[in-house]
Length: 125
Image 1 (tube, helix red, strand yellow):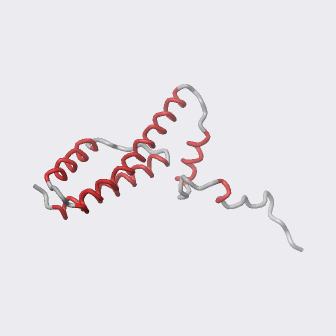
Image 2 (image 1 turned 90 degrees about the horizontal axis):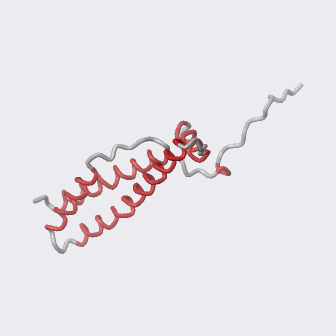
């Protein structure tokens, strides 16, 4: 049996890894979710063996929205791939890839982007 402190750290580590995975997926990158189901099941089984630890229960509850966010990102990614397979253009994905390439967050609104430089440099005499 794993100690509760170790279990809480494992849950926090998984949450952080899933947040990073979600960010990568939102940027249009593929994510390797191999073993995720086993890892979550193991953490849940270990947590179930420890009764009455409120901090542990709270850590597991904080994991749920992160899992939901990864599931939503996976669904969007699958829909984008299906659209591409059907030949439909997805400008949202192109913007996300460009944002990722330039180091900007995928959630940046168009108004948050810097203005374009002038088409031709102005000359002062």
